[in-house]
Amino acid sequence: MKIRNHKKALLATALVAVASLAAPGFASAASPNAVPRYADGKIRLDRVPGEKGYWDKPGATSLVEKGVNVAFDANGKLKNIADASKVAPFQPWALALYKFRQQNNFVDDPMKVCIGSGNPRQMMTPGGVRFIQDNNYQRMYMIFGGGNHVWRTIYMDGREAPNADEVTGTFLGLAVGKWEGDTLVAVSTGFNTRFWMSNGGLPHTEGLTLTERFKRVSKDVLDYEVTIDDPRTYTRPWKAGWTLRWVPGDIQEQFCETGRE
Amino acid sequence: MRVLFAALLLAVATVSVAQEGFPLDGTWRSESTAKDGSHRTIVLIMQWDGKSVTGTINPGPNGTDFTGGTLNPDGWKFTLDVKNAKGGPIRFEGTISNLGKYNRVVAGKWTDAAGTIDAKFVHE
Image (cartoon, rainbow over all chains, first blue to last red; front, side, top):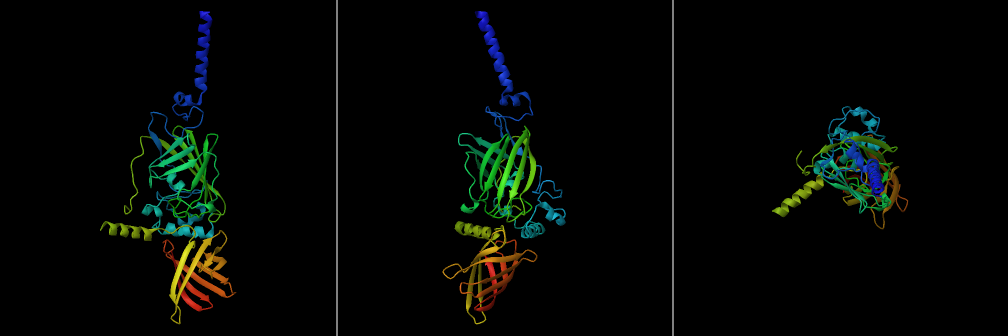
């Protein structure tokens, strides 16, 4: 009897061990480069307990349509203004305004007076970003270390995106999100037009819809893709994307101050 | 002194606000003097709907809604050719200047039943 119980205990121990190996959360312990997950299998876009780190080192300096190869400087200024029409599928007025801003050395960039930047711009502004997953309230908070040091909320509770014509536009819009497999998909509408969504001066109107896809493809790499849909400004929806790297430590304190430049 | 400083900062911040979205979106006001010496105030509220510039001239009981305003980004020429509630023609042809500023300007010739004036619309 004792031997039988001992065998049962061994079997149970073995089963638990096998189950642990198969559990999603185990992966991070098994492979240092595996994507960390919660116990329910959902991706952790932020730290695991006891870890310090955040996303930074964006792999792009300005917003440009995927597949287009044009050269920018770190401020989003085109090396060759003749490339302007390649950056995005502009409406004529939007191309003219983009060129004006490019040739005007961005003197009217709202960020120069600490007016908020757009969501894609925050994702390419050095300084860091963290994702705080609030599973109780079904919200995702994004905390940004660069630019205006703002945070965003992505509502994950199944609500619908608002009709842009029925809300007062804001700098960050209202974002609703869901998981598509391991990818967080956030759709944002209800923007004002007081910001530049990219450092290069890409225009937009209140009709802007941003669809952002966040995917942690490994422990240290986050893929970011944004679809820009604003038929008043662009002739068709278009996509841009880049990666961010996981870096150790904490986001540093920083404040936007007018008159620094 | 602090209040004065804060007010000064606010004023600087206000005039520093950058140009936003479609260049004609928003409220515009022209204060001018006609040839007969009379003062003319014209207010335009305009919006880009993705196809043309729509809006209202002098919003209020006698306002005139319009569609079909055009902006040619090649030179930033703005044209308005509409009829008021009584069928009277209103025509404006102007050019945007200070494009990058919030308080940008559209200046040109405004013609309606009262005659033709040099109108200078400032974005509010």
